[in-house]
Image (tube, rainbow, N blue to C red):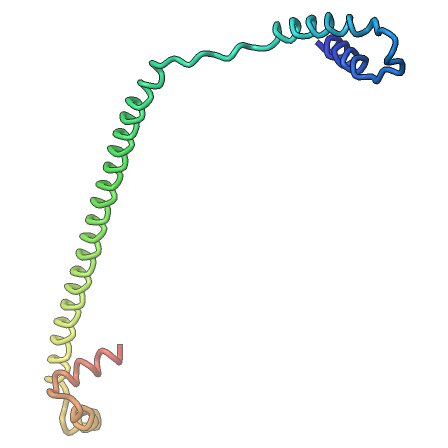
Length: 155
């Protein structure tokens, strides 16, 4: 293939050289026509003819595009539905955790109330601790609330 290309380039170069003697008949001019003819034949062998497009392909393409679009929309809807379900499940988990934490705090508060009540019953109001607690409890609505706060801070 390279030798053909070289030959073609050489032939073209020779045919494009300016002639020094325009008045004299050029025997190469007759050869140029023959060379051009041969060149066209060689090029014709190696060039592929354009493939004709079938009208059936064009008609089936929109049908396949609509099928693909439909499939893509279905996949998109499936993913959106899965995302929605996952978001709902996550929200339910968060709500359940919050409720569990609230219940845990409530249990701790109840246990602290029982402990504070027992501490108040054992507290001697005339002892130094009892007198201190009386002054401490003045800022609270009840002695139980003050005892809960005191026990909570001391632990």
